[in-house]
View: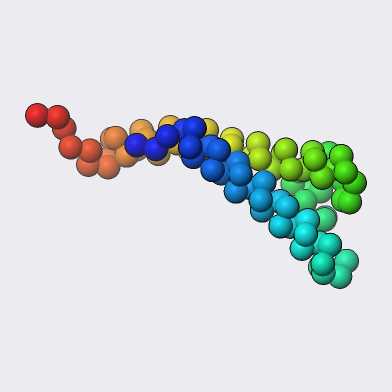
Length: 90
């Protein structure tokens, strides 16, 4: 059985780190290869290269990851219990 707290925090941190890496990538590569248009489409209120835009994007990224964990874990645990071959107590 998966822990909703551990999976949600793990996915939230993972997506936040991925967001930071995308921003760093956008600062390193030429503008034609930026991730900015994609990030602005996926993250509402995110604006490229502004302090508040970065903070909002980081928070939204974390929340998207946490949301996936909150939705995924109960589904996984239900299916694992139903079809995963959890041995019955004797």
